[in-house]
Length: 74
Image (cartoon, rainbow, N blue to C red; front, side, top):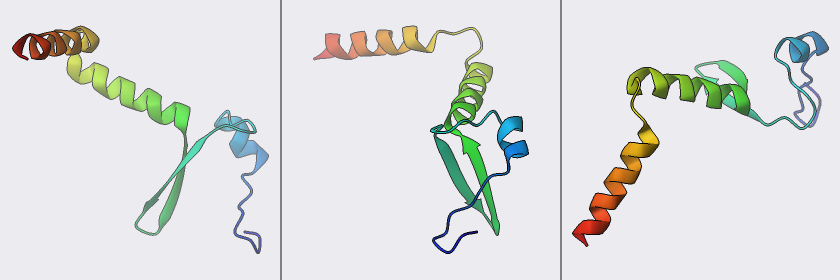
């Protein structure tokens, strides 16, 4: 770590994680560990989790129906 707190990610790690200059990263601290994720990877994991629980339902369609019902109640 440099004096100003910057950390260099080794080229082999950047290649393995497909990190390019300017790519947004998310840093999480767990206990005494720092974990670095790409924003792209985190969004993909979230989408897979939602898809797993939603099954074949269209969440967008359900949201539109809910909003339509809410608007009808006003």
